[in-house]
Image 1 (tube, rainbow, N blue to C red):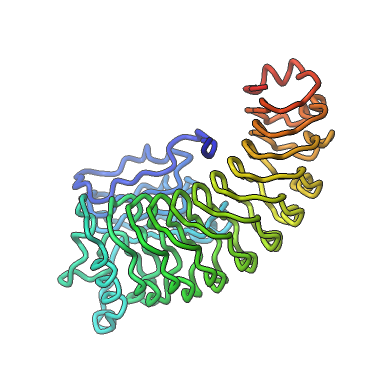
Image 2 (spheres, helix red, strand yellow):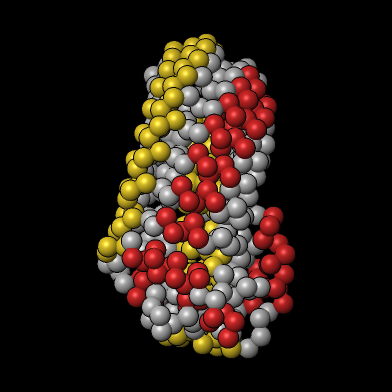
Length: 398
């Protein structure tokens, strides 16, 4: 079973390069769950609606290469100060309304040459997304490329997700030293993940999910000391989860699901005190859950469909912010804490099916988890009865 879906409304509006003509309706302010708005490379005109400043979940705003006019609303400027408080907020807020090309930025074309080398590794671009990547156009106008405001000639984000690209990722990507975000998810990149990425000491976000990368997870990713999000989901990566990842003290999200990882979950991950999300479902992991994980800040743990054994460490019940506790299809045994519902007051989703758990389901304790929406405990050896209020408030599979 994959990750649980939380339906909070529209979270992304990606209409870049659609050739649209018109104005941007202020009704966009009613999409309260929006985290990303990308309307670049269209022909929108008029003012940028000030109501966008009320989208408190917004992390990415890209309006480049349109015909907007007027002033930037003051409440949009305030969002620059607020963005650092959002969950997994290392995707930088980008308000690209213009592209200042200076004589200095035209002279220093090092990053542009690197981007051209990256394009050379692409064998198929079915949607023509990289058609703007050409010498006649300054790279700050290239699709998916975002530059530094302080240093216009330096690339800080490479967001080419869902472009349908086929090819390999050139090791030259390690020659973009100002990169903070690399998002290549939902393409068809293959080959190894370049170890050169480990030299990008400013990197904060690395998302390579839903591609066909293979080989090992580069251990030198641990040198990216500012990394906050590392998602390598649905690939062909094998080998052990590197213990070195435990040195990424700022890491908040680690996604390794649907790979070929083997061995044990490194106890060193317990050093990640800021870790909120750990997803490593559908691998070949074995051994116990390290008790050290109880020192993290997780509210989402997904380790289903592996070969994990042992009991649930008592230290995990210290994770009072847990919302998603997903351990199904392993070989766990033992009983659950009689105070689980007290320990996890914000629990929404509990999936422990197809294990070897025994003992009582302490239903009165689970009743304390008032936000519980889904419980799947089937194919274990639990005893006890489920109270009526849980049967009414949550979807149950027993």
